[in-house]
Length: 277
Image (tube, rainbow, N blue to C red; front, top):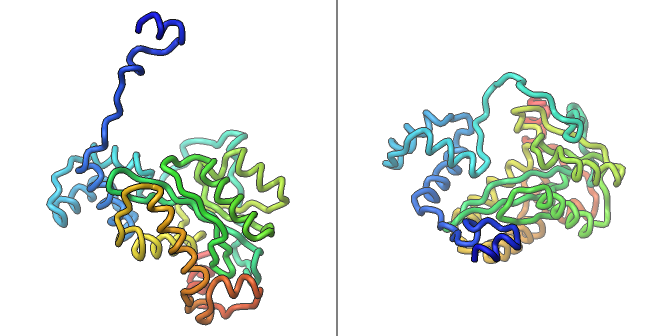
């Protein structure tokens, strides 16, 4: 074995290594952290320790909470100083939607990533949405949170519609500031817009989509595998786009508004977003 590893330049420790299954208690704490984040995204690790102990009788120390939050990509919303300057390859783009009336399909698309809790681990879901019609144009699912996850969702959206947006809005996550993502949008002739730091309201419509899909599908059905979760999301997104009426769209479906390219009445969510911007 030693000679084989030397010839293949492989560490012996990696040959004998066996992956350890994630502890069930860690998975449960991640579920609770994700649910608590939807209630109050401003809670830090100290307060989360108190909340877990008070509401769920979970005796967890602060370091464990911090480690589990890092694993699921969760960070509290708080004001912090600018401690670094982005590299050339990770340029931050300005927010282009302040005061802009989005009154037609394909004027603005947006994208975001969310953490999906599972009984034996977790996954990440990325979706691309048309801002005007609220239609989910493409999405992708993976157990890793890389740029390829976002590019797959983008290509699915481009392939399903055959159209290109004028403006594409995202947050400032490393996936959306990568050269691969911004280069693909630039090649398509799309204007790139990014939320301000800590400005979740700048992309509020897709944030509301995450709340809907989690409470109406993911939290109700504990999917054992990524394959089962993907099949379940196919059903949910199809129903969301083509069957479920939206009050903000005059009780029409996102698919109807997107395909017929009709103007929709401005709903309460538009007013809140304009005030927030």
